[in-house]
Length: 113
Image (cartoon, rainbow, N blue to C red; front, side, top):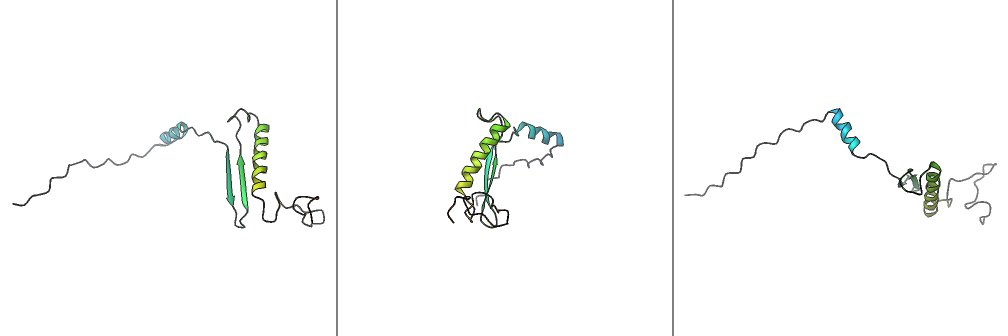
């Protein structure tokens, strides 16, 4: 006599997924708490330069209540990151040309030539 395998438990097949209605999708998105937050994004472009994006939202902290506070905070963060990731040509910001179109020296007028 040979032993036969035990019968597998018979589970009902899963029910097909129900499609969500538009109102169900909207409700789910609203319940998510879609409030955006402040953020910093660092990316490299094709030339290898670091590109900085700073987003500061008002009302996230006591020190950022107004648009002016958000602007000041964003500028502080941007300037700190721009100093940490200078452009390859040594500029800390966009290259500046004088009136004749000559590229200014990195660091401004008082920079060593």
